Amino acid sequence: MTTTETALPQRRELRTAIPGPQSQALHARRAASVSAGVASTLPVYVADAGGGVIVDVDGNSLIDLGSGIAVTSVGNRDPRVVAAVQDAVAHFTHTCFMVTPYESYVAVAEKVNELTPGGHTKRTALFNSGSEAVENAVKIARFATGKPAVVVFDHAYHGRTNLTMALTAKVAPYKKGFGPFAGEIYRAPMSYPFRDPEGYSGKEAAQRAISMMTTQVGVDQLAAVLIEPVQGEGGFIEPADGFLPALSEWCTANGVLLIADEIQSGFCRTGDWFACDREGVVPDLVTMAKGMAGGMPLAAVTGRAELMDAVHPGGLGGTYGGNPIACAAALATIETMQQDNLNAAARHIEQIILPALREVAEKTGRIGDIRGRGAMIAAEFVTPGTKDPDAAAAGAVAKACHAQGVVVLTCGTYGNVIRLLPPLVIGDDLLREGLGVLTAAIEAL
Ligand code: PLZ
Image (cartoon, rainbow, N blue to C red; front, side):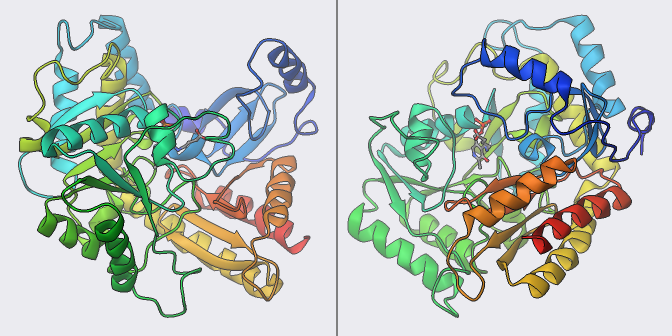
């Protein structure tokens, strides 16, 4: 652990009820000033964060098992990232890459071209948010193929902008009342081993999706298949082995582009640079964001040079895309991931989380499925003895964890999944303590 991180004690310590009086006072101010449409999972107001802890304005130190939704994989304020940001900000804050460019943008493009799956020649464009990257991947795919349709999957999450709402599956809270949505988006069945027929293979699940695409969309209309290789918001659904390779083969054979949305699963989160790497799947385009810049807003689309360069000059861009401070943070973040081998750290975290969850699943019968990889692991809650989703149980467990100073997040189409996304730099003891609180909350259901 590094010096700035150790300056913040890596422990859980509750000084007040959660949320404490200072947080409550801020929450009242917020209610009078911030749109009610923007909600918070756990309204403790943050004063400091680093390593595996979040310290609130009441002095409570909480264990972070969420990383701000899979963002602070290198921890908050890693000294190498902080130094890179400070250095960049002291030089210039913004010029707009479309007006007068700078090196760090180019360096980030070189880095992600090298790290993303496949040895082919690639090009990259940078944006501000995951949603914006996904929007641009669709724009590029449509432009390069001259075709309109995009296929997405059940349980998919791709963002909250108008086009990405159409790509996202779940209506509440993301889409409710916000239509009309963009056209030419079609939804295919996902491989969901826990809820598919017993023994259903990845190949069979891919065939089911392909049959939908050929009969309901048609390859002559289909620009791209867009998929999260491990689904995030939809419940950490990991398709059966062979599903992604079969889809990828079919896409290549039929002139359809495969876009991997690695926004949540990328940058060491699953124990590989990208979740596609495990089965050697090489997408035509990859979207990334979240973990890549250590908390600074940055997103990217990387893809085959001939696709990325097909777009006319000026066709892609935005005022802030590839902001120099965010680019400096990304370069330091990626270097930190390499220096500290955070892929290995993610796999080590998996070895600690899985047995703890398996034991409590066995003991309580409340968990129907444990899935995910690396530091992206989830438990799906069911009514004991059935596969009926139990959202109330997941909600109660999350609430109990929050009250005891452990930040966990829920997810899933049915709201019945607890997901764990700790910073990859969390210490073993802190992680074990957090898991202890979680498993006790499950036992107490
Ligand atoms: N694609 C796979 O996980 C963001 C959303 C939280 P933005 N996931 C967290 C919420 O409720 O808004 C995400 C993702 C995948 C795209 C996105 C969108 O990324 O940076 O939130 O726009």
